Amino acid sequence: MRTLAELGYGTVDLVCVNLYPFEATAARDPPASNPELIEMIDIGGPTMVRSAAKNHSDVIVLTSPEQYPSVLESLSVANGDPSGVDNATRQLLALAAYQSTAAYDAAVSNELENRFAGHDVPSRIHVSSGPGSQLRYGENPHQPAAFYPAAGDPSGLAAAVQHGGKPLSYNNYLDLDGALRLARSLCVDAAGEPHACVIVKHTNPCGAAVDQDQVGAWQNALASDPESAFGCVISFTKPVEKSTAEAIGDHFFECMIAPGYEPGALDLLSTKKNRRLLTLDPIGPRADEVRVRQLDGGWLAQVQGPPGIDWDSVECVTQKQVDTGELALARFGSAVLAEVKSNAIILVASTANGCATVGVGPGQTSRVAAVRIAARRAGERAKGSMMVSDAFFPFRDGIDAAHDIGVSTVVQPGGSVRDQESIDAANEHDMAMLFTGKRLFLH
Image (tube, rainbow, N blue to C red; front, top):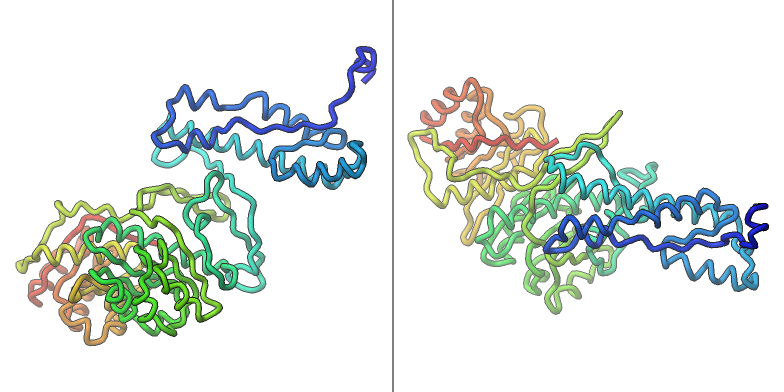
């Protein structure tokens, strides 16, 4: 300070920095070149921000235009004196400054790893987010909770527009995420069908259908398990038509998400005031992505996406063979199954204009128990249906149970040391069986 005084220099009272737009450059399509991207890595900016934040008791640090109005107001009231910005505000601005540089470094690290290392999963996990939004509570009322949008331009649920209704809950977010994942998978594995409808309850699909007609997609998805669909989350892959809204009528659901709503549809659906109606445009095909999950002592990361089964390599291992229509049904069923908690069994069937689930057996510790649950949901509709399993059958009892309820075709990955027993059972019952070679566990 003595040196500053001797040189006649004043102190720095305020530092205001907007960092180079690295994230915006990294998000460009087509991608920016590596030299152009690296040029957007700010060096001096973070240095000034961090040094100012460290000395926040003497220096006001601003890192976002959203901070300007309140600070300018405080300075104006104090006739430009920096003391007009109190210490509590300075502390919050310093915290925001460190959060800003941490997020910036995370974005640089993640993008350069993606470009330079090209790992399927990252060597380290660096996560940053936008500001969190407080939720009423978590899964249960005694648990505090918040939603944190991913850093950068809004995407996924963070980009969805809500049309009235109560704020989204923690459980709503989980179910909407599950509905979106399946809807996007159906855009890949049932791309030939113009309409898809997904119904989710407690993160498990309880009904799904693809159809030439949106009303048909809704009705067939609902018919899969109307009891479980009470208080559900619904997703459509195309804008909701007025006729679909009329068909839904007074059905009780928590949330709906779609690429839009045709004239009159939103008004009809909004007659129930607590419905949460969201628009996310577009709802496009799902692609593989890294998903991270926290556990005690660390994190797990894996690539997740649509099933990715090579249908040209799928093998029919029984005397009875399948036709192209049954292959299309198997592809639809596998897409749905991939989003059902393990052990999972689903029953699917062709409809007049598409495909639909007729019974879902989710999250069982016994595969045969999952068969029985799916059968109970399906009732008479199990006859002639296709059974899809997320893993191989370790014993023939699952195939025998499927025959008892009238299943005509079984789809499973294969891979058990007792596969031949399952094949023999299918042949005895004159059933067809496909081996996909791909397990679809979900935990």
